[in-house]
Figure: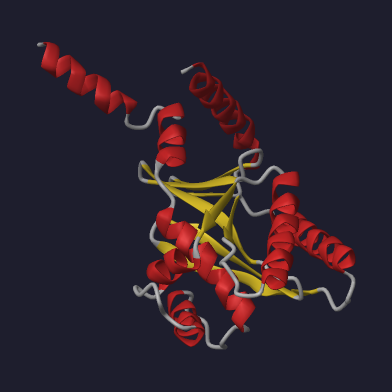
Length: 232
């Protein structure tokens, strides 16, 4: 309870401070950015919308895919996607390039949430070990920048994006294009990373949204009014 109160207090403080950073104001509609939490709120006619910037990572020792989407309500919007190419035979150098690449991307785009695909059990133990190391470098880079990392299996991601847990990569690419309204098919690793981000958007609960709404007093008055009516 104490941690929740502290969180609400911090959010309220950020909200008050952010009033000077209102990006637009027009006929009772304004946009607010809470920089510490990287939460974007759009207020219009007493309604609030929340925007999250999600980065998905598809780890690999040679190619690590990344994809960034904007999630607002039920809407998804493509922001960026690509691959980090290690292009070296030395594993320590590969891990360094993965870490540095993700660090650079996160600092540039400022995502609020991260999703990483879990390692599958490869038949080749050496391949599984290298994939696990690449995944560790990616997660370390994300957590080093204070991002919370959600992890999903390949089956969970495919089920969320395609509706079928055993979908092939071509099906994932096509559904990513459809969901994000893309005219060009993304490279496979980038598509898998975008799929991880989409999966996280679908799976994200409403706890953070509820916390902000409660902190701003939205919905609490309703709860008090209902409680008052019951006491009567």
